[in-house]
Length: 401
Image (cartoon, rainbow, N blue to C red):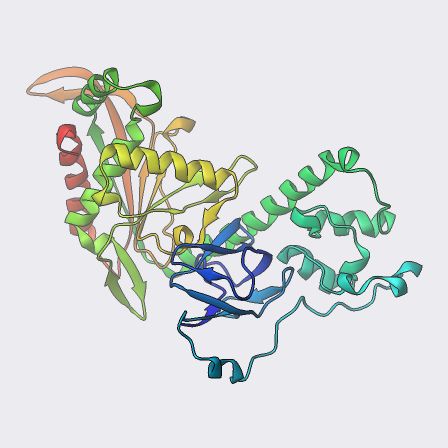
């Protein structure tokens, strides 16, 4: 065991704010336990521990923003010897130092000691530092009373807000949190996509897939199921994508240290649009090993928790290939940008009836446009074509998915 670090929850993450600890020194933890809640520019993430042990010490206080890789806690083995306690302990990171407000309120001098560590979103901390604003003098409307960017804007106009009953203040904090989160998320997504488009030599391929057999099988299968257990077409698309990725591994992995590192597992990143705006792409783990029912249940769970702000760190850190489906928005096809360090992104448009020629006969069939954006350093058009052909072939025999 050893130090538990602030994880990297995506290529665009540089730091995170510890909103809440779920454990205390002396607690026993097991692999997969949630130990903390961290706020990033894109979402609030539940942080898991990946080994069994005992929490020796919390090294970062709630409300502190720290860079990726900073030790958050020390976790020792259950059989650790008492002598280990004598090891030197690093200084405990706290919330960033806050200069005095240019127009400090008279009550600042009498502020209780607990207010020294103020909870605030990363965006609010940056703006406060830029404007020389004392966060302790600003009323917070975020989770747990955290200061968000909208609080700073209000304080600049009206000064520190007077306390108001929770019921009266509820609508405004909700809007403030939504605006702050959306602005921060758009910034983070923009930075990552700009870097991806600049640094990754993309190539793009597309094909139209006949879904007649898949939808006939799906209709028959759903007739035998209850409403809550019915499969959606998206489950078939994800399952076929996962199996195609296993068949063509050159598109499933990461470009790191100037080389391609294939992944032994298929963790599909699923792009999820959030109700307040923005997007996250958490991983559906081992998608190639799940049955269709397991995949459908996992997808429902993942989307629900993504929109509720309850994703786990493992789901954000390790997608090996991302799928985005904008068919329910009426989009014909998607030309995506790769999420570095991944090397490919699969896009699906809407299922639509289109003219289709087969055996010299012209008819109309339900089809979907499938697109591939891939990294030319890791693969080429021939490999990309193999992947799309595999995807098409798999969807023609849905009973085998």
